[in-house]
Image (cartoon, rainbow, N blue to C red):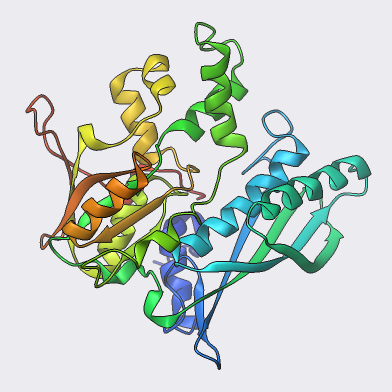
Length: 333
């Protein structure tokens, strides 16, 4: 009996990536960005991200300026996840002929305003015709080879540090989709969640602090654009280790815990995605120093283990231990 031909939805996003990786240069792929050695001691970091109308954004939730900002932020976040400083970006933009020129200009304004925060320039790109708006950005950065952050560097005993808070972007999206929801929140609380979705800030500010830490020998990490759970799982898979994450250590936006139940808030923190924070694994002493220096801008949420499993635990004993998986978050297929 002949099997029907496989489709992309049969494999899921991660399955497709694994299938296609055999065509890639393995030495430079597998992280948030590709890493290329250059003359002069630096390494070039290159990342590409695609945003598609009605998949990643819509005019119902995202103004043109915000589409531009988020597109830039997503790529800069990948550079931060590699420990790199940005150099510039190129922009591929696909449009239908009836898109307003005003939308295009405001999109570029959003790109420009985000990039300005990090002294990064638009270096060129391309425009073509399409039935839906598609944005493809390639970002370039540089890093010293011994300061590269890779997913595969985590070691048993490392502390897991997350920057910022998680779950805010997903909550902001829900508020934009359903404006009548959460009316009892104060205006400032609503705005903080909506802004977390529309105007995320890549954590390039954290990178310079890492390599000045006493006792630092290595740093593993990636960003949490696909969710906190996804980041921990991807790091563990690449490093051949496991992890224990403490439920009550995960930092949540104060407004989120007033908006939804503790269980829903946790799910959005773990799997909501698009928070664009960093998830870092480093020796415990260095991690504690980093958290002290950042003064509340980062939190130790768990530890790397020798087990081949990532578990969520509750030290208070109220909730049972839970295994985290890649299948619970957003999947394109």
